[in-house]
Length: 421
Image 1 (cartoon, rainbow, N blue to C red):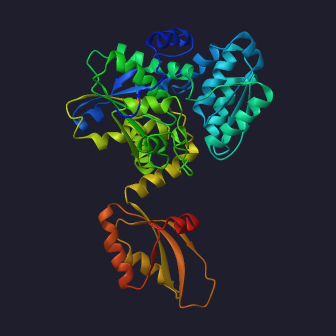
Image 2 (image 1 turned 90 degrees about the vertical axis):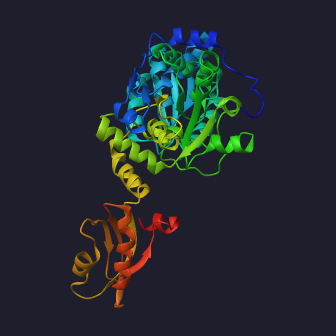
Image 3 (image 1 turned 45 degrees about the vertical axis):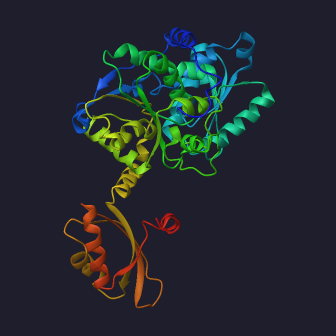
């Protein structure tokens, strides 16, 4: 614990009341053991499958609890929200079920699948507006529209009713497990789910260590905790869209700052490999934010041996069109995908020589861009090569240099990499 004790803290009675309210629409999601992960980490790893929730994420809990609490007059005005996807679907479902008009602002980069699902759940009761490049851009536009129209803004995480709704995940966990939970891993974007879980476990299972996990490219909570106050990040990696926010909540930060046992960040590439492993080895489909908690287990492999572990899988709203990027990021993180500028001699047979004499027996060209634009002796090409093992990289570079093919290695040059690849 650090910092000041939060002035707002959810009460168990309010959380239990939220559980009653959402029971008519929310699923009690299963808590299942992962045999593979339990063997891998020599402990019992169980997954709280919020990806199997009605809108395929836990966000329906908070959204429905909040909108249900509105007065008749507020409902007549309609609601408005901003979301990267999952909160939007929860709000859309609540609007349809409660027959309340809703306007939903989503970042323009939101995966198509999430936009379509939001339309599906909301039907004629919701209107979707794509605005800005990040959640924060969409949120700013939504708030402005709300002020102009008088519609009630439904915040995705920084609202007592939202936090109390997300906290019902914790109530279910307590009821579903007979053994004490030693470690609970929770994904953090704005901090609503984590704050809710903290409020339940601090009362009903105070010995449980709660570990917050967020993307390395969007460390809004960790940065704020390090600074001792809410800090707005200037730039974030938007890839893990369900957890990529520039600024955490004013209500959620004091709770997480005071009660979280640890706040860690995980590389997006590591998350991508986790997504692929869950799909290929467990037949579980998760979105990037849903895989964060499982990706964090490696960082705790020594601490969690013999312990009872729970990871929250927050959602499964993934777009299949992102598969290529997920694989690419996983390979780059695993040091198996490498990009070079190769200087090919402008003579017949140069490419054949490169393939036969330079590439290793298990190396594969997966990207190739070349055009002859001048009469120079050598012409550059951008070449992507996939290796079987990270140890194959240095011998490959040495063969390139020895045979005068080597131009540059661009994996570690972000500006050049983004421009060329």
